[in-house]
Length: 253
Image (cartoon, rainbow, N blue to C red; front, top):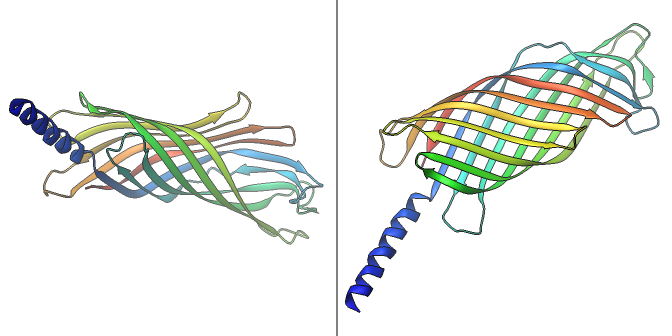
């Protein structure tokens, strides 16, 4: 009996030690150099926007900010949590009519689009650095706040609108940690599609963590990100994407 109790005690201590390693917080922030491209067309003369026009991106590069933080624990049935933020900026030209007012025949109005995206991602660990491999799956609830400004041109006095929406996405993340180094390779994707309408946000990166402090490990990351939206529901056709290199700093606790 003493041997059994001793064995159970040792097993409990080992399990607690292993679980303690799973109590983790990571955070990062940096800049994403975006190259936008594409167009959006909407026919909604009787709707709220009274929009019957087309927007075409000028494909001008823009550097925007991003940030993320994840909370990881060892409670089996409760999902871990990852929070993200990114801003998007696009400039282009709009033709047709906006807000019920015609821009003018053969005339385009300068337009800017600014988007703030907030992602709430509950996820589960399928693998947690098992043979140096991590695999997460979950659900992303993406909150999108956008603002469009159509500039004045000729008799057209300009127009601005604010919009917000929520998109549910499936989430998957894979990571490989190079043994005995601080180097890691990682990719993740958030996506939804019904065959006609598609939205995805995908990243791939390399990062390096510096093991120089006992409790806080700083690091750097560099990668490539592409966000794509394609919609065709009759009155609306959208084919826009934003992609480019991103880089930032990380902290692991």
